[in-house]
Length: 189
Length: 181
Image (cartoon, rainbow over all chains, first blue to last red):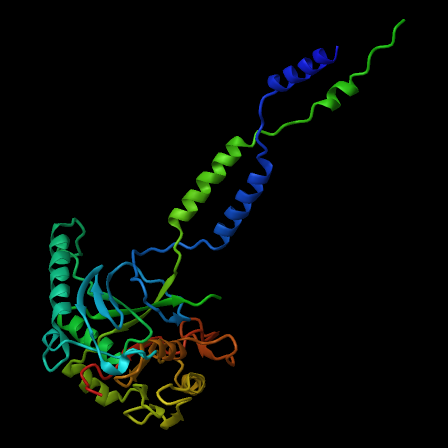
């Protein structure tokens, strides 16, 4: 008698379909979606960064559009994701929070104003942009290819000195880039 | 005659089970999309043109004598002045060596803006050793109006109405790009 009841019970269990409790999982997913939507931000540019860079924060609200970019840290300079030069770390910088660095002598010319590797990279990028503009169907009112925009975005570490930025601007201007965009992190409102 | 059996018991015993699987699918897809497209750091920019000058422009300037508002930053102080002496020169001691007093500079520039509401350009002359961080802070102080600032109004020439000034001197030009100090 007892055995028959047990077998009936077990048969019942086997017959029932296994149901996963999804409600708690749904709760977790809803929270994640709400969090992501709250902190969601998209950009219209492809600006990248380099590891270890400390970018300053700015109150500016201007979102930069896509352009060529130079990244400067106290260790090196990167143009369009390619390292173009490395700085010399001076003795005073060792163990100090304020980074001190110098250009290698062969990297500068024109009275230490122009950065040679950057100038070469900028000229190459300009030539490439001009070839693309020649091939492009976009034309101005006179039917000529659109002029070279000459915009350079500068993303620098907090510790980079104005002297370096000045050299970059001088070099860029020599290569035909007349507008500079100083990049910074957006201040949370 | 027999009583008709009630149907209430039957219906109440079976609860409605919502099929959450398609909703779950949507959620997972949405999370994937949001994670893929979100920007984890949001960049902003401050634009500055390379200063250019033609002979004609310089001659025109000499005739008209513009404001040419200039902010010279030194190791111990900052100076707001005009090469054409359109404003009285103001000297602001630095908050600490090498760090300009941005709050004071901002309030002095607000005063200048009161007298020249249509002026948008400022020339800045930083020291060679000034860090990018300070440079950005200075440019922020020069360009924007804070919500806590006293309200400033300018006359819109097209409509004739007084409109609040939302920007201070947004066009920042570096004045010593060829200098050595």
